[in-house]
Image 1 (cartoon, rainbow, N blue to C red):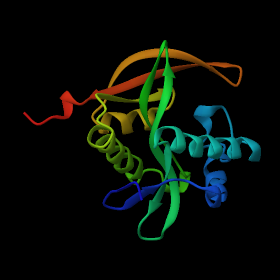
Image 2 (cartoon, rainbow, N blue to C red; image 1 turned 30 degrees about the vertical axis):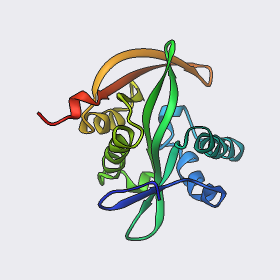
Image 3 (cartoon, rainbow, N blue to C red; image 1 turned 90 degrees about the horizontal axis):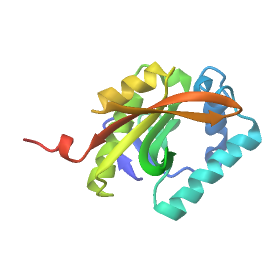
Length: 175
């Protein structure tokens, strides 16, 4: 286990999570910000990328497990992401649609922010979110982030404007 919140725990994903990951990444509604559901091979590439991140950095997107059922309901974690001319530490989250609107993304993202500042000693953390993804933008705001800037990413042949929501170590320190 990487971290624990009131209702959830986060752990590294492994090959046994492929089915749960397919439930998330192959759902058209869940994947609207990515311009559509993933194929089996794209899901496997996603999983392999997380496992590679664990080895390289010691973190990545982690499986979000609901304590009451021991079910993988989503993924949330920390990744290094390109932003303009730099690499930034990002809190990312993506949940099974059947678990939306229950506060799980906010709870997991808050746990990841705490991990970034307390364990990784990060000075700043962000969430990079497509301009049309209002639900994820709301999670970022609830996680104490403010919109800092905009950049257009090119993905699947489409120009996708993204916002970067940011918070830093100083803004979370008690007065």
